[in-house]
Image (cartoon, rainbow, N blue to C red; front, side, top):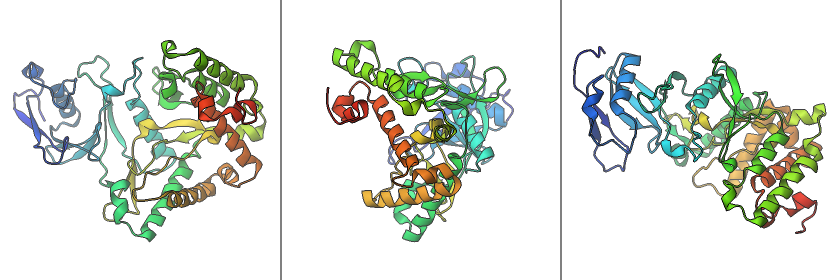
Length: 392
């Protein structure tokens, strides 16, 4: 829509609070940002809403008229309806997700880059990115990503109404997607991003919660685990003498007393190769067709994705409502079987008692040690450090 005329517009925001609350409205005039001076912001947003709406209008030549969280309850993904009736997904980072070092855990560049690569190289259903705006001069106050809108409901919502046969078929479909993802090999441990100079896809730093910021990318599994162990404590001021002692012992174990991390034979290197991993691919991040719930419409939340060593990967729990531990284990076994059809190394990993399974188990123990380097005694990892379950 032409923005040179001062045409007052109204955008409706519905579904942002509880179901009984009334929709909120925002009256705006394209490019008249001065008209929002002194107005209270909606939902605690700190960016200029008028500038955001104006930019969306400029990009798509059509003004946005309605915002709705999608899926419902989401705080950074919104279904935006434009005046011509088109729906698109707008993704905004949350300022509360920036840690004390200023690192943004919710990387829109990672979201755009990873989802595009997944669609191109793995055929996984996603919401395809349409437009990314970095807001380099901070004119709006926030970057944003616009993606294709995919109709659907979360698996968490659909699951209780599905038959046993439908559930089984869907689980196999999830296993197939995992098989596709874990077959995408990457050169380093980190997360996908874009090279600042060329714009080409590359593996960049990884956000480590234990380190309180971004680290990497890492050339090998040993460097990754050591950095994870070093960052277990968020600041020096909270480190007690006992905690520092435990951390030093754990780091020494990883650096000098873990031959498994130093083996560079072809067999071992294949197990430790970085592959694409979505740590939150659960019932809240899988959209299915509401009329045919065995059809996966999209996997969302790709800002969580990263490249991890295959041997260090543990599949996330699906978080399916009404499922006890035995049922969850059955579903995970089915997913393992589907992955094994696409990934030979994963099939070897699933063969209990074999050398590959033993390798995977040892790597997982070292990863848990790294994550708990300042309190491994309390967590019961003495056997990992000393080779036997004794405390020293």
